[in-house]
Image 1 (cartoon, helix red, strand yellow):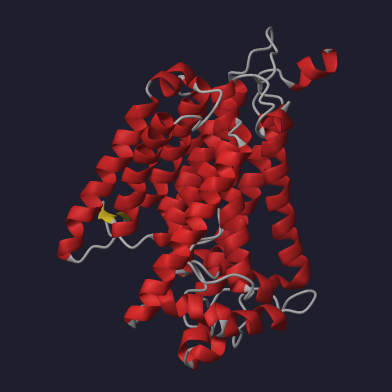
Image 2 (spheres, one colour):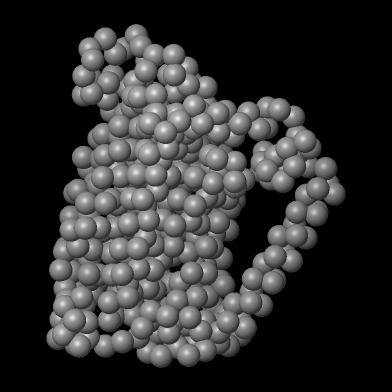
Length: 398
């Protein structure tokens, strides 16, 4: 019992923080490597390369803002987050509506902020879904155990998902659906209910796919799926990015070609958008197999640390928050690394903490801040286990 109490005590988790900021620092470096030019990098210093890179400098600014984001959210009143969970939900839906309203003016899923910086509400939608789902699971020991609760939860999740989908952010919707499913699994949903939902989802996707194919509609999403399932069905341009990404990763060998190398695939823009969704190809080329292994190892450390913290969190709401953040990061990493290596279809999902993008980096940091907030407010005096969920998966967290 003393051992369990020590693990369950309230604290600031330094290990998780170090892992995350290690990835983010590597992200600034990787974005700079992917976007440097020989003309603007006369001095052979790392700082000069970062400053000379437009995207590298902007990513460095986001990186410097990250400690402030994590610090504010970590010390934010925990009970306010618990009791006002729907406030975050309404704020996320409001931002999605603002972005949707701007779409007619040519803005797609982004809101102009200041000095050329934009805000992507679909990123913050994921955190809002995590918070409101955690609140629902705190109050319900049998998630979706009745038709009324199932319909209520479907409507609650369906609104932000639909708004995001209308904006063309299919990747963000997939992430939200995945983290919702994982939270339901660990929250104790009946396995029969989950099996039925998965079966209906597969049937729905199959029908939708059939309708799209039958209609002969040509769009980039269908092309991406076809290029993954059978590359022979599409032209070479559709597989250009993935093919070049695999070549760039393979060219790095075991140790990589090095950083800021003139004539490298990164410097020649051989892989389109290699500073955003395909940043892993830059890492593979510059740092080789061992660099890729280091990145995957850091992600694994983050995921395992989150599971560890969730296991020894007695508060159900807080535990589900940690599980949701873990699921969000897990799907991003699995899908992004998979698509850059040709093992998964291209969905436009960025690599957490590494890909260029302020909204993505700040959202992931905010998610980590939520986890640190939960751990910081864990009770030392009353270590209670999860309510037994013998019918579902909640028992695995005990």
